Image (cartoon, rainbow, N blue to C red; front, side, top):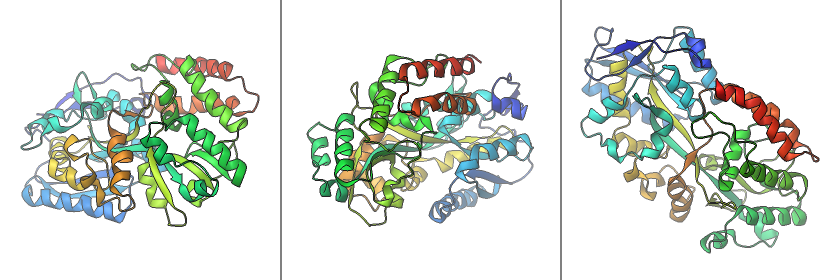
Length: 428
């Protein structure tokens, strides 16, 4: 039975919505009479994705026509997604279910915008909840339960332009990986040498562009650095691991030139870059103009740490029929549905983290590449930084980091100032 409770304000999302949150059960209690039309917001417009979603939804409707008359999947551009979703909620036009980015996950969970779905999923016939890797649930749960299902866990990896590396006479980096010598020091040394011999660019952290600092987590994780403490209350940019990690990147950009500097607009998929760190899903941009390979993230001086970008599916508390929406979520994320979605979205279910489950949707990769970069790249992974105040933190930290991206920057001094700026947002 759906019950209602008031959440305290304090986060940007809660303040924007002024909402009354809900807790979700699984035995009815929705206000809607008769079957309802459900709506889920997504950020993909890919026709194959949407067709698969609709197939799964139509199967549910066929068996639950008394509860659901239809399901609509509404595509919102990725760049505007969270803003548009929040606008819908504050404007009284909420979807019933929504995809949610990992960076916004804690804010949605703590604000009360989502209903508790854990009990519904656990009680669904044949759901096999225990098959879900507990580590993938961390962003979406608190002491009151689980508020979203982590449907996509896309690992960051290193794409290699092997045509370019061979032209520059570089070592076989796949062989280095297999021999246990795949490190960030190795990657930067090869990138530096390739630039010296061929020009162009070395290693590019895709979508960073000296602005989107949280994408650097794919590097600093190997230094055991963190943006903030695990409980989200203490800034750790000024701690030595982060000073070492960002100092390493600063040297690569301004001293060795192993990385392109600020203002250099280069793209690995254009063919003039030795290697790039990006999510595995970016493979769709490969056009056959050069030979390539892929490896998991290198080891840093402290560890080799896998990093994923994650997305959850939650049921909105403002849904017209939250219990019905939660029931559909159980179907959409069931073992059978997850096996089909795994073609495009790396799943949290351990039984599906196999080469076979992901091969159909990733025809660019051979089995070895899928194993080492996708399957192995999800194991024991962490997510990019996420926080209940992430929107404000993202802007504040980006501005505070600007002085770092100058040749004569005092790395430690800049990072002290980052914490001075960020700590009040972590305290709130």
